[in-house]
Length: 340
Image (cartoon, rainbow, N blue to C red; front, top):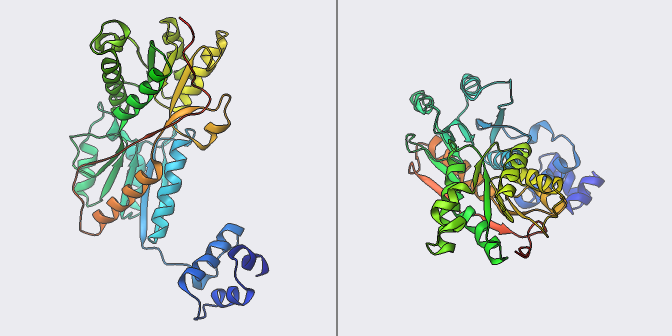
């Protein structure tokens, strides 16, 4: 009780009243005491455990990329705040597919499902799976990857704007040959980043030819895997084309690009500048600290939860795409362009 009282900054008598379910404690104070229990690792007394309002499935691609656990944490926190119990389904190589995870979630009677970077973002995948899910009366929200063939609430970052922001930053540092390392073109976020990249180079060139023109931009895009290895391979090809600035479709790819530059004896950022995308909490501690375009994870995750609750409450929101603006976070992986 003393430890909980100290953590919650209340008296032991107040902790006692909360744990015993007594009245006379303000709701805000009661919540502080319960939060202190959680932080210190104590189990709440059975009488204080809230009955779940239902199960909500969260389907994500993997846990190795830090951006997905970041989304999952905020979504689960938001769902818990509304009394729902989140059920996490992860697609690991050789493990359950998205369709298998959905089937298991539906069998468990989930109230709805949030998909993060799922097959809805893959333009080569059959969207009928989502139509069938809607036909079974299971509401869902799709995060990161708009697909016009699916009628549902979508929550997305502005991927085109993200590419614009990154290119503009490198242009302001004097870089003229800029490349883009991004995921496979069949994925909506990758395609949109490539489109935004081409637009940004075209705007900067003012219609000029060469690498800055719209036609040259296509040759400065490398589609690869959203992994460290993919970023390494793409950066090698872009460095061969004389790029001094590389924009990456994820932070993991950016780390691969840094590795590729160093293997060639190049310094980041003295010789090559690298911009990532997502903004993991670990980026401030990489070598060098990674400049990146931050996804608004908390805002997007909360919007997805609210949209799903509207759907489950028989008051569905408009089936459209809700787009959130990213922001540039400048750290140590970008610098002035090297002399020609």
